[in-house]
Image (cartoon, rainbow, N blue to C red; front, side, top):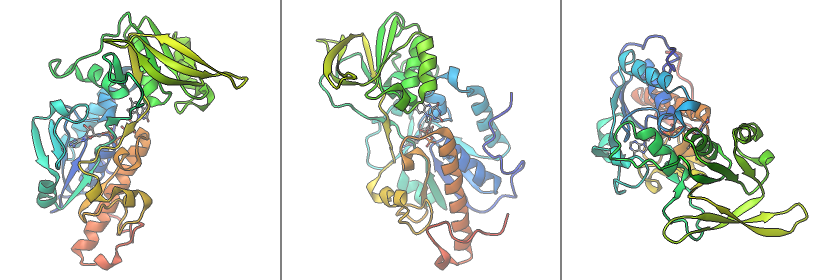
Length: 356
Ligand SMILES: Cc1cc2nc3c(=O)[nH]c(=O)nc-3n(C[C@H](O)[C@H](O)[C@H](O)COP(=O)(O)OP(=O)(O)OC[C@H]3O[C@@H](n4cnc5c(N)ncnc54)[C@H](O)[C@@H]3O)c2cc1C
């Protein structure tokens, strides 16, 4: 089995430098940043609140859709060959409560972002998008209504500690998934995999317009899913638990009708929201717009940011690219700082230093 190579820029790391970098978040962006910096000789420490590295690749995307073993082999390679230190089950936060997002219950240790800023020469925040969007309609708090991550996370996390997660009972249930992006597809394929009695995907537009692409939907339909386009959920029904989803369907002639879909589980997989340790003080909006002194640098000079926490929910490849860009920017900034050439800082990453 070939390891996913996060330090692919160099087969062996350069001699150790005197600089220490902390990476918060061991998803694809954090692992790519760690691989880049460690291969350049930086001492890298990665912090993650979960019991294993990989981020959504390990705890969101179902294992039958991603080579989990190759990811873990890549993480071991980062540790053994490139000397990256992993601090798992460790949440980094500021003032936010500890148990706020999926996976927080696995954290045994907690550090303030301020501590890392003090203890390391630089920090890269790669904490992803872990808070699910809400539909904000009646009945969303009923038992049996889940967000995409509430549904998927326990399925992947249960192998670490079943007392900390409650896996939804899927076998034999009628399931409605709302949305047609990556999360919705994974909810649907997990439901089929785990023996749902019936499965319907509700989307407000047509299959052609679905963010996951027509191909994914066709595959799921072939496996037994019913795709219901041009449907908008208006409320979840049920007294003590959800027993259905009421939707408005737009017909081809422009008329609308109300449709009730009976179910015992409804999943709102309509996307996630970025979860930085704290947002305002970092000035993330300015980083997003590129109104910064240095590419990927936040309002705190030695703190950089990358991946979905910066861009919003995206894709693995884009998160890896973002992690690499932030790491390169950090390395260039550090090199100039050491040479006292700070006046050459520019928002586009500044002059590239000679190849290392
Ligand atoms: C259900 C689902 C299915 C998807 N399917 C696909 C797909 O098929 N193909 C594709 O290309 N993309 C897919 N994506 C998108 C892809 O997974 C993400 O774009 C990518 O993982 C983002 O990488 P990241 O490193 O920015 O963040 P993440 O992968 O989210 O990693 C962030 C890491 O930070 C950690 N963390 C968060 N906060 C803290 C904190 N305060 N302290 C310490 N650690 C913290 C988390 O535990 C996590 O390990 C999917 C996303 C979801 C939600």
